[in-house]
Length: 297
Ligand SMILES: NC(=O)c1ccc[n+]([C@@H]2O[C@H](COP(=O)([O-])OP(=O)(O)OC[C@H]3O[C@@H](n4cnc5c(N)ncnc54)[C@H](OP(=O)(O)O)[C@@H]3O)[C@@H](O)[C@H]2O)c1
Image (tube, rainbow, N blue to C red; front, top):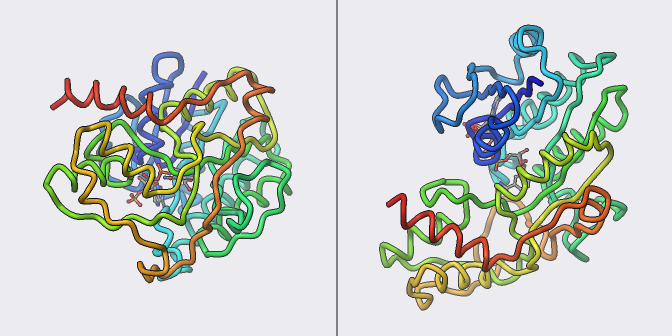
């Protein structure tokens, strides 16, 4: 079975390419000229906003499944340059829907807890959406593109993804680790909550969706509901770093361009029950990253 991953050099896309390559023939596309993460995949550069290039690749690869991980994931960037971000986060999905319409290819769209307003998280699949920033609005709009289409789709929402790669720029774990290791002070908010998700746990959940041919909307996240300050403390404690370098602040202090949902995060009962998949606790995952990091360094 051929699987095409968009955004395949990103944090999730590269982990997915690595994980799925043992059982499937994996093809990856991303905006970058080269496969910058060197994840195992047949790689081509492709901008998902360019419908003709995307169509050509899909015609050539003939994937049974497309996993759309390509996105502009800069939450503040989505406020700064709305048009550019919208072309990727919504336009890219519209292109996929247009190409896949009437086919039996299965499109798995990756979405986020930022489609909720963060007043009452963690959220279940039936809770009312109400995004409070452009990133969340765009991701919700892209979900609706699928829901209203005749494409064979699944939407998987996740939150606060982190990787085992301690130099991954998009991973909170790597950011905390790198700064504390250099004895740099960091400001971390104590009012944004979520259930941090280890990227390889999420790739296993995505594989389960593929194996079970599951459709509809599913939430996936880690077991522990924590704020970012608590998360940073756990990272420091696991890696034996100085937690006094972590300065507790509130979101208001950061003056970020995009408002953030405070009590965000996702309930995972549906995916755990229907697809018989478990979630991990943060401490165990951080310990395992520490063990593998020590052997890599
Ligand atoms: N990270 C999280 O905590 C989180 C939480 C919930 C949901 N998600 C969702 O999970 C998915 C993957 O996120 P991630 O954390 O892996 O993000 P990521 O590391 O930023 O990966 C996204 C990849 O897509 C690429 N891309 C951007 N524009 C493109 C275009 N026009 N055509 C093709 N590729 C393009 C990016 O390139 P550049 O790096 O050059 O932009 C990047 O390599 C996204 O849909 C995101 O919304 C992420």
